[in-house]
Length: 111
Length: 116
Image (cartoon, rainbow over all chains, first blue to last red; front, side, top):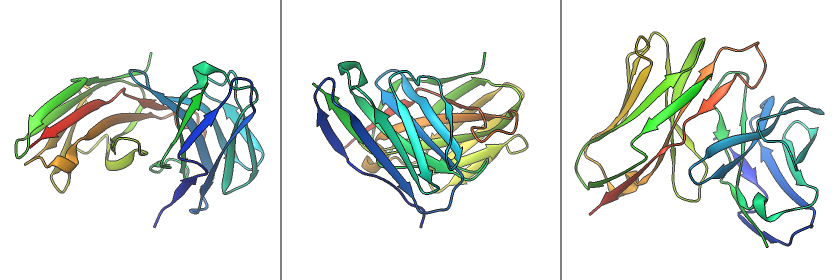
């Protein structure tokens, strides 16, 4: 069964903290994605990766960075968290043009 | 500009009733269209995928239609259940430059509430 897991379901951080969100997939997918989801705005792509050590900016990369050292793991990093980064973060993976599989999401609150 | 518009934004229906959600898109060149169901606080889960040549596809009580000429899709839910309460997201894939992103364009979703 397909599985995408995210390291935390809920996180509370303070402004200025460095935040790591981790995502692991067990399907040997090449492509992995990070989205944020906000009410009224839908899902917006932050970064994606099509191979180990490869990354591409999405629509809203400002304030974020990513790391993909292993095929199964894709990390999202908030170098200095700000209150406007309070959101639901969703990781996804897929093989080429196939269906995307999403993780359960991490709800991040930045105080 | 590639866009996906969903309507209505939200919908409340009584258990057992049918409903239809709409998705209009201006995406070119079109590759495929997916409907996802997202339960509150969870990640989206794929319901159906439709390519250019497909008009109708069913998944249990969910039936998706696609009119590639008018660039419209609908998701029909039959005999709704309380567990159908969720957001339904339409995602259209554009044929891009072969990159892994595949140019996915997300609608903002329709929030469905099924009441007893």
